[in-house]
Length: 260
Length: 194
Image 1 (cartoon, rainbow over the protein chains, first blue to last red):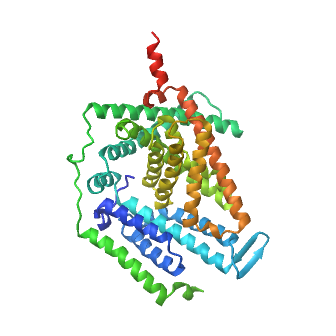
Image 2 (image 1 turned 120 degrees about the horizontal axis):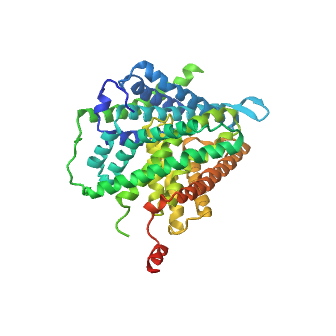
Image 3 (image 1 turned 45 degrees about the vertical axis):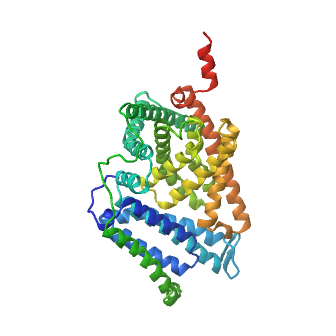
C-alpha cells in the first residue's frame, strides 16, 4: 500500500522481529479460553492500531469497518447455534445459551485481535523492508525474497491488464449476459489472459535475472541493511507486559462482571 | 533433481499465487456479503481459498510448489490489507501443507482431476482443523456443524478441485505451461524421431 503517513516507532521495529512477535501472539491467542483475558489483550492491541500506526484517525476508522462485519459474523453463528446448558432464548433452530453467548464473544474477540494485529503490521511495514530483513535476520534464500518482491511489483501491471481486457470487451460491444453461462464466460475471458500473461512475464523476468548472474549466495550485499535497536526491546516489552497485565486484570477486575 | 526449485519455478509460482491473492481479497467481500444469510451458505464458496495450491502444482508439476503457492497467495492477500489479518497467513500455511502432503503421497507423478480434487479435500481438512482451534466450531450444535462440513467440503471439491483442473486445462491450450514445465520423456521421444 502506498499511502502517505507519519512514521511512528512501530515503523522502526525490525520487520522480521515484528512479524515473529505477532505470529507468536496469534498462536498464544488460540489457547486463551478466558473471555476477560481475551478482551484485555484485544484492547491492548487495538490501542496500538488506533493510535500508533501514524495514519489519520479518519483512515483508521474507515479500515475498521470490516472489523465490525467480522466481529458480528464470526460471533453470531456461535451465539445463535452453539451448544449450552443454561438456555436464555429458544426459537426453532435458534437457541441462545449462556455458554454459547460467551463462546461467541470469545471467537468474535479472537477474530478482532487477529485482524487488528494484521492491519497494524501491514500499515507499519513496507513489504520490501520485510523481505530484506527476512534475508538478513531469518536467512531466507534470496531467490525466494526477490521473487516475492518482483511479484508484488507486478500487481499494478495485472490491474492495468484487467482494465485493458474490460475496455476491449466494451469496444467490441460485448453485451452483459445473464445466468450461469455468462458468469462462466466472464471468468474465462478475464482469468485466462491475465494468468497466461503473468506466467509469461514471470518467466521472462526469471530468465533476465539469471542472465544477469543473479546468485543465491547469502553473503551478498544489500541495498537496505536492517539490525536491532531499542525500539525492538520496547516492542517485545509491550506485548510481554500486555500478556501479564491482561492476565492480572482479568482476575482482579474482570470487565464482564462490570457489564453484566 | 538439483537442490530444490529453480528461480524460474519460484518466480512463476509466486506470481501465480499473488494473482490469486488478489482474487482472494475480492472473494472475501463476496464471502461476508453471503455470510449473514446464515445456514452456512458461505461455506459453499469457501473452497476458492484453496485454489492456488492445486493450480500452481498442476502448472509446474514440482515438489514444494503447492505449499509455496498457498503461502505466497496468503501473504499477498495479507499485504493487500485483508481484514482477516494474520489469520490468512496461518490458514495459508496449513492449507498449503495439507495439499502438498497429498501431492507427495502420489510422489508428484499424478496430474489428473482426481488428484486435484483430493488435494482440495486435504486443504479443506487442514482448514477445518484450524477452525476447531480458532473458531471453536466443535461447540456448534451437531446439525449445524454437519451442515457446515458438508457445505465446505462440497465447495472445496468444486472450486479448488474441478475448477482448478479445468483452469489449467485451458491454460495448457494457450501453450504457456510448456514454458515452465519440466521436460518429460515424451519430449525427448519427440526429439528422437528424425
